[in-house]
Length: 242
Length: 295
Image (cartoon, rainbow over all chains, first blue to last red):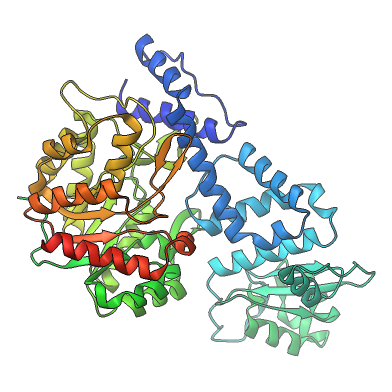
C-alpha cells in the first residue's frame, strides 16, 4: 500500500469513527493486500482508534460550545445536547477552526425546521451566525464617489426577532426566562466590524434593505426620498456599492 | 548540519489570546514565547479559496505581550505529511506573519490532516494523525521541510506527536526514533522533542521512553516541550491541561544533560485549561525547568 492509500484508508476510518453517517471506507479495495486490509480492520477495532475518534469529537464539540453558545443556550439543555450529537454524527469534520465550524453548525441548525420551535431560537441562531460571518468579513471600503447602484453588503445580514432583541439577548446571557414572542417584528441589521455592530432598523430601512438584496439604482431610491437612509446604511456598512 | 538557532534563548511558555494574562504574570521567569499562528487566525473562504486570515484583535493582544521577547512560531495545521498536499492556506498566512515579524525559528507537528477522499478531492481527518515510520514517509517529510527552509530564512524544527492508533506501520528496523533521526539527517532540520508526547506514547503503546531517547540523535534537538494531560479509558492524553507529571521531569533531566544544542524549553498549556493551572503552579513549573536545565 502506498503512503497515499494508507492515509486515505486511515483518514476515512477516523472520519467514519467520529461521524457514523460518513461513508464507510472500502477495506476490500484492490489497492490493499489481504494483510493490509486485516491490519486496517484490526486498527478499527482497537481502543486506540476509539480514543482517536473521541478526541476528534471532543475538539469539535468544544469549538461549537465556545463559538455558538447563544444558540445552544436558546434551546432546552437536553435539546442542545441532541443538536450537538446529531450534528457530530452526521456532518464530517472539515476544519480545525472555531468560527468556521460554528458557522457550518449554525447553517445546519437553521436548515432544520425544528429549530424554529423553541421561542426565539431561530432568530438567535440567525443572529449568532450573522455575527460570526461579520467577524470573518472586512468592513466594505468607503466608496470614493457616491455609487449609482447599491446592494446589501456581502457580510451584512438582516435578522428578524419577535420580541425586543435587546431583551431577548440580555435574558439569554443572564440565564433568565426569555420574553414571550409577541405580534411585533424587530429587524436587526448586523454589519462587519470589530466587534460586529448591530442595531434595530426601522420599517423604512428594513424595506430598503429587503429591496437591496438585489442591486438597486440609487436614483430610483432617491426618487422615493431614501437618500438619507442610503447614506446612513452605506456609512454603516449595511449597504455597499453594487 | 542541523537547523540550530545560533543563540541560546532559554525557558518559555505558550502565548495565545486566552493566555496573555498568564504570560504577563510569569514574564520575569520567561525568556521567550511560543506562538501558534493558527490560534491568531480565522478560516474563511475568499473567492472560492480557503484562507487563513489573521484576526487583528488577537494578533495585537499577543503582540503586546511578546513584543519585547524572542518569539518562535509553532504551527498546528500545516499538515506537513499529507500526500494530498500541505495546507496552502497555512503557508500563505505564515508568509504574512514572517513579513510582520520573523521568529527565531518555527516548527510544526509530524503528521497529516488531509487525505485524498474517494471523490478525488482532499478531505479532513478532523484531527492530526500520525505518519507511518517508513522510508517513503521520511522522504516526503524531508522534501517538505526543504521547501520550508527555502521559503523562510529561519530554522525549522519538527515535533514528535502523541498518537493513539496502535501498531503504526514501520519499515524493518525503523521506529519513531529512527524515523526522526532520518528526517533530521535528510533535511537538516532540528527536532522539537515533546517529552509529554513521548511519555504518552510510551505509556499507551507499552515501550520505554528512555530507550527511545537512547536511540535519538540528541544533537538534533533544539527545543523541548513539557506539558501534562489526563487519563481516559486507560490512555494518557496529551491535552496540555495539567502540570508536568513526575516521569516527564525525569525524561527532561535525561535529555537536558545530553542534548548539546538544546536552545529552548517551553511549558505548553491550553487556554481552556487555565482553571486547573493556577499561576503560582505555573511559576513553580518554570522555576523547576530553570533549576533542572542549569543543574
